[in-house]
Image (cartoon, rainbow, N blue to C red; front, side, top):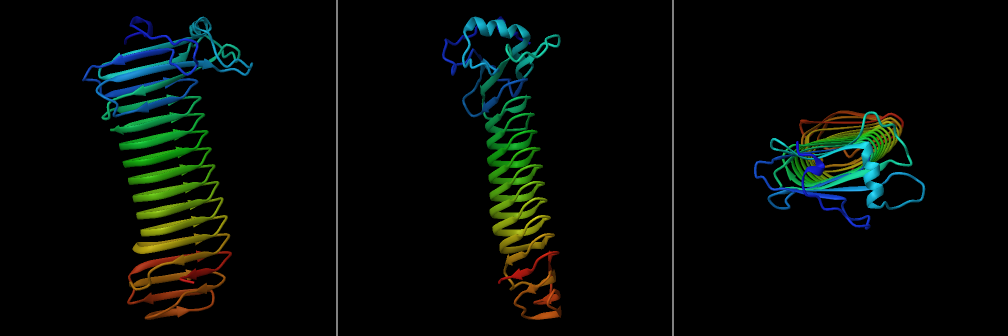
Length: 338
């Protein structure tokens, strides 16, 4: 490990938007990046050339009205931290951790953030306890987490795992295996393809231009989506579900709202259920389907139908049967092409 002060560093002037330290690494064997900080944000952008550039920013982390620090004040406060920026094997490492024997002090603590530019084909491990994470333009395995900030992800291709305990997630233009979880924020996803898992315990989900095996669930908000193909499994315990231009297999449920879905092409199944609202679906009815519909009222145009149809349920086969279509509204009505 190369220690922070063992090589040339560029110290910023008084401007707070400039890095306190900048270090460059140009060895072609470097293929991984590890960044960890206990109180600041992390930003990583790939595709920026052949080498790594690590910028470290130091800002006050207290509420006494002080928005900037002098070089001497920074150096004094950094005495409470273990800081390393260097290499280990084929990995670039940047860490900033409070020393074990130093107690937290709001008046002298600092926020230490890292901004890194890398080649595109780089695997990452990123962790912060008190800031957001921005990661973009990388190919490979990406693993990142924060306990107190948001995630912003753009243009990744590979195995992606991201976690936040207290912020929102915004992800776009990503491919392959995508797994993103938050315990306290919304999720906005656009232009994703692959095996996708999106989960939140406290916010809404917005899905646009998705293709693949998609799992998207929330415990505390609504679900909205448009232009989705493949297989979608989605649901909420605290809101409605609204989906447009869905092409493929679909499973959706809600415990506290209604469901409105526009299916442009059927997949292997359709399964929609609501415990507290109506279910309204627009879908092609020219294929063979097995219908199992129930609600306070069920309304569907039946043609080439063999089965039983009553006011509150429809069970049977249309066009000879085939694709299972199950629609259920425990406290509302079911409407198909109405």
